[in-house]
Length: 154
Ligand SMILES: NC(=O)c1ccc[n+]([C@@H]2O[C@H](COP(=O)([O-])OP(=O)(O)OC[C@H]3O[C@@H](n4cnc5c(N)ncnc54)[C@H](OP(=O)(O)O)[C@@H]3O)[C@@H](O)[C@H]2O)c1
Image (cartoon, rainbow, N blue to C red; front, side, top):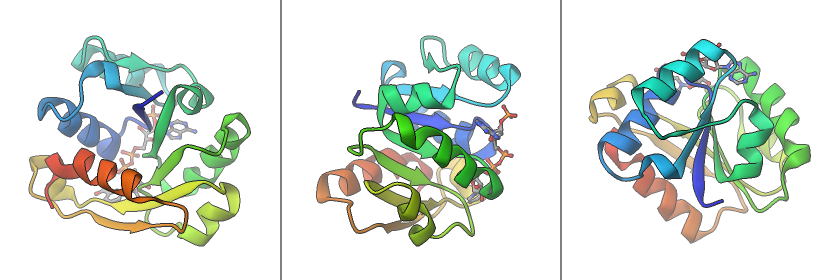
């Protein structure tokens, strides 16, 4: 339950997973990934043997306390609407989506919500991630997220 779940294994999702695991900040048993296509899920499983792969977005919400939405902005609201009914409210949702505001996210999920916007140079560990926490995010979640994103840069 203390694992980090990543929904969407595209450019940003794979970059984050790579950062978490190649840096050793997290182990494969602490990360669960899902993506819309079987092809992306297979690519993740092949790149990181032993990593958790979920077949559905709702499964991530059940298995992980921190849930990173690494889907396109237009898919972010749709995915959040899909997973919220299976959540107990104690989770920390982190959205990478440009253009989807905290108010909109907090309107759908009343627990902890953070926006985190990495840059493309995060891929080589030299990016800057802009982070904006919602009203419910406590010190513990904020520092946990900071630690997890450290491999991407500052
Ligand atoms: N790219 C950047 O430089 C950058 C920088 C800062 C922030 N962002 C933000 O990061 C987010 C992701 O961007 P990206 O560049 O990584 O996009 P991307 O490469 O298109 O990846 C998005 C992934 O989301 C998956 N997906 C789509 N709908 C889904 C659903 N309903 N359930 C589960 N997975 C789904 C797709 O899966 P399949 O491949 O399996 O179909 C795809 O791999 C965006 O919101 C963007 O605004 C991007």
